[in-house]
Length: 255
Ligand code: PGA
Image (cartoon, rainbow, N blue to C red; front, side, top):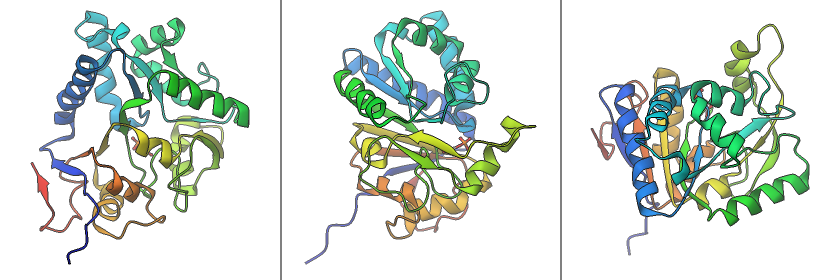
């Protein structure tokens, strides 16, 4: 009898990274149209910079109604309050100032940045009261991390405090010059990410190619935290040709 394979996320290879922007805006529009004030969780890495510029324009022009959803995000460096330079919320609101307005109105829920256990459980309860995450945007680290779930992370965990991998710190370093990049962060766990109704992961550039291959075509393994997504029934992966360049040609990918 054939074994039931892990469901593989839908994978689309785009001609260019910027072609993801209308697709990501479309994902947001659709979840807002289908749900009453859904909770949408954003990824804050550079991968989503162009998306956030467009989102800001759409929120300001009213093409996307900022009162139509509640926002949150994946992770934050320890002790980085929303207004501290280099922090995830700070970077996010620089790219998308309209989200700063949502933060001020209480409709953007920042990850508690001090890591106290009670604050993490309270944050999870807030997310649950907001209906749970309907749409989760996600990037991937070149070591296969998702949020700050570094290689070896549990696939079941909720929000927790974690040590950052050296590749993660090296990638973050330019933002913090002349200071050292942070060593610890609060992160959404893979369990929380897998609980989202829909997950849309983007990876662009040659530097992500090996992580993308491990995510999609190696065994599901803690050595590539993103491979946990292969057990998600409603995940979409958007790649540019460079990020897709290590995938086997036989891959079940659309363009
Ligand atoms: P990036 O980060 O979007 O800045 O490449 C992605 C990640 O590390 O998850």
